[in-house]
Image (tube, rainbow, N blue to C red; front, side, top):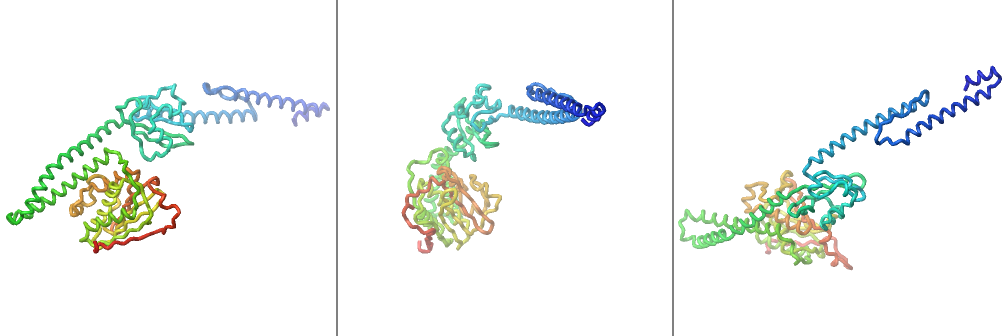
Amino acid sequence: MASAGFVGYWFNQSLAAILLITIAYLGFAFYQIKRIHLWLIQDHSNSEANPPESFGLWGNVFDGIYHLQRRERQASAILKNIIEKAQESSAAMEMAVVMINSKNSLDWWNTAAENLLGFKDPQDRGRAISNLLRDPEFLDYYNNEEFSEPLKLPSPKSADQILEFSLTRFGKGEKLLLARNITQLHRLELMRKDFVANVSHELRTPITVIKGYLEAIVDNSKDLDEKWRKPISQMQQQSARMENIVQDLLLLSSLETSNITTSQSDVRVQELLEEVLNDTAQSQRKKAHHYRIECNSEDTIHVEHAEFYSAVLNLVVNAAKYTPKGGEIILSGNNSDAGYKISIEDNGLGIEAQHLPRLTERFYRVDASRSSDTGGTGLGLAIVKHILARHGGSLEVTSETGEGSCFSCVLPESRVVRSHLEGKEIDTEAEAQINPSRL
C-alpha cells in the first residue's frame, strides 16, 4: 500500500492507487479464506488431502496447518496401532471382554464374548446389555453396582458351562465386563466338597467305635499293665480329636452345600455374648481369665441363632486358648459404618502380620506346636468365615505380636433390628462382668 501510494503520488492518484491495492489485497485474502474453507469442509476420513499452498502470510498459515495435520496423523496412527494391538490381544484371550458405554449399551467385544456369551456382530452392537444377558441374578449384580466380588452364573449359551463375571468402572459411566469359563474349576470344587463330605461321613462310624472301645478300656484301666495306661490314654485323646475334626468337616460341608435356614430370629446381642461367655468360662476355668461384655442391652440382630452362636463361640474359645493364664478377654457389640460389629479382643500372644490373610484357610497353622497343645482342629476360623458369609457378613482380624488380637464379626445393616430402639432412652454403653470363679 505504501508503494502504491508512492507511485500514485507521481501520477497525482494516490487515493485511487491505495484503494485499488486494498481491494486487490482483500480479494486475495477472501480467495485464500475460500480455499481453506473448501478444504475444511471436505471429508478427510478416507483421504489424506494436504491443505492448499500459498505464499506470504497465508503461506505460513497453510504451512502451520500442514504441520499440525502431520502431527495429528502421526498421533492417530500411533493410537490406531495401539487399539489394533489391544483388539488383537483381546481377540486371542480366552476370557470374554466387553466394553459397555454410559448408556449401558455394547460398544465392543472380543471373539471370546461371542463364544461364551453368544454376542453377534454387528447386530448386537449398540444393544442394551440387559437385553442380551437377562439372568435376574446378573441384572441385580449389574444394577446394584457392587462389583467388589465376582458373580458365578451358568453361560447364556449353555447351562453346562459356568462363567465368572467381573465388572469394572472406567471413563465417564462406562464399564468393562470380563467373563471367564470356570466350568472345570467348578466341577473340581464340587468333587472336593463331595469327597470331604463322603470321607467325613464314612470316618465317623469307625472313629466312634474306636473311641467307645478306648473309653471302655480306660474305665477298666486298673486291670491294665502299667506300661499300657499312658498309650491308651493318648489314643483316647487323639480319637476324641479325630472325632472333632470329622464333626467340623461335616459342619463345613453342610455350610458350603446348603442354604441358610429360614428359622432365623431376633437375637439380643448381650444375651448371646453372656451365653457364649458362660460356656467358654466353664471349659477354660483353669486359665482364670477375666471376661468383660460391653454392648448396649437393647442391641438386637436377626440371625440363625445356632450358627451365629457357633461362630462367636469359636472366636471366644480361640481367644481363651491363646491367651496366657489370667489374661483379659473383652466381648463387645456396637454399630459401625459397615453395619453391626461383634468383637472379641484379648491381650494374648498376638499373630504376626504375614499370617493374617491365611487364618481362615482350612488346617492353616500359625504355630503347629502351639495348635497341637491346644487340641484345635484348624477348622474353627474357616467355619466362622462360612457362617458369616451365609449372613452376608465378614470376619475382620487385627493383631500385634505380644499385644493381643481382635476378631470382629461384621454384619450388614440389614441384619440390625431397629424396632427395639424406638421411643427409648438407651445408654451408649452397658457393661456386664462375669467372674469365672463363680461359675
